[in-house]
Amino acid sequence: MSQTIVGVRELKARLSAYLRLVKKGAVLVVSEHGVPIGRIVPEAAPAKARVEQLLRSGLVAWNGKKLPGRSPVAKARGARPVAEILLENRE
Image 1 (cartoon, one colour):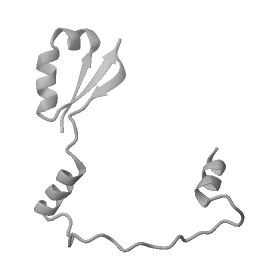
Image 2: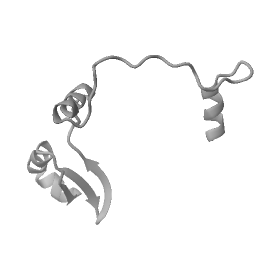
Image 3: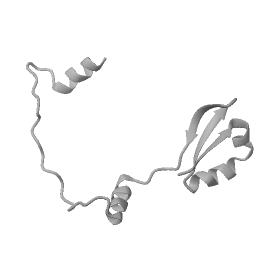
Image 4: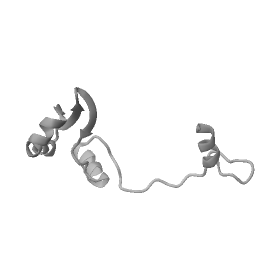
């Protein structure tokens, strides 16, 4: 995937041409006074399409079945769930 840096003024003047580049897979880095301020990237394919592409390419193998459920590896003492305690500790 190629990457192109373009200033805001140039992007506004030639928007259609730059959007054609994005459609072809290019990533645009938009800059203002030489400082990158954002990116325009191609729309990602849906997850199902990406998985199918990986399967076709042979990069992954999958039998199509869902994984079996698992029981939690940690239990909290008290009424608060583990996820709530973890989020509190991250702050």
